[in-house]
Length: 470
Image (cartoon, rainbow, N blue to C red; front, top):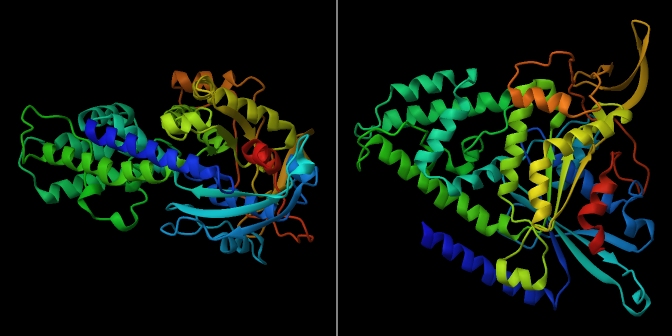
């Protein structure tokens, strides 16, 4: 295992050196990773970002655009011909068609290249010609990112940690009963192994549906062409006194190590380790709506996610010696259009507090981080409603059944500790407040020439992520 890790490290450093030296003689490339857990809105974020970079009428906070230095932006074939192309055109048609709908969620990795023709800025810009900058956007499920934490755990450590984490969850009741009834010292029986894996997968699906974030291994939820293979046919088990070769426990451990070697490490080596800017999308509003336990689970999961990054500055020397590092990380609370703009600062403050530990570690390593609340596609308008004689700041949007309704989701606290402290203490529900959400459909809209779809703060997000390179 140590030799494999050493080989991977050496390989990445050699590739980083070649990439760094080659970059001196070619157009600069920004590799932007976009991830987030289920329902965070990765597909909508990429679609909205690309649409508004192609037609920049709604991007005043992107400095290069405000200064008139962007001559043109266009889509190109992605450089990695082994990856599926992010289907931007189909997703945009779904969001902006006659009957707008949310596109299908991310189920695998994909890529898209956007190229900018830009006039340089600075004192000597007049002496330089136009520059081409490429933005490679890599879309991948957040569940795959959580799997990177498995690389540092043995099967026994992972099993113990999993049982401790899910012991009190009602969604895990059936699986826990099945696992505890098994004797891992018995010879492998493929039928029992399959039943255990299916029961564990059913738990993961139920937990994700109910708002839990720590649903790993990620490929159990998004198996793709690995469905039914032995590498996905394992589950946590208590270690028996006899774990010799040929026992159920030994085979589960072997398949777990196979999952790391055949699924997790190739993803890290081929894709994740090459990213230098990163967006982590967080559906914080849904976690708040689901209650204190879901919010605390989200906090722990986000901390785990950041341990997968190698944050730091990407100097030429650091790329040669250490491999590429993630220079900038944006933590974005999505669906900001589900609350009135007066509450956006509170949502951002909750994000900052939620990710305090993770952000501090990244900043210490030299990476720039920022928390932000945004809406990749604005689906609501704001209005005031009166309830019991009180005027409330609400939002109005279209439901999937085409009804238009106004919603007041509740008031977020000015002090994030009002939410995070009860969540850490393990209370089951909010004691003095209720937070509600509706599932709004995309709004019907007519776009004027030169304008992308309406959004909230995508221009600020773009400026933080790529503005320094344009």
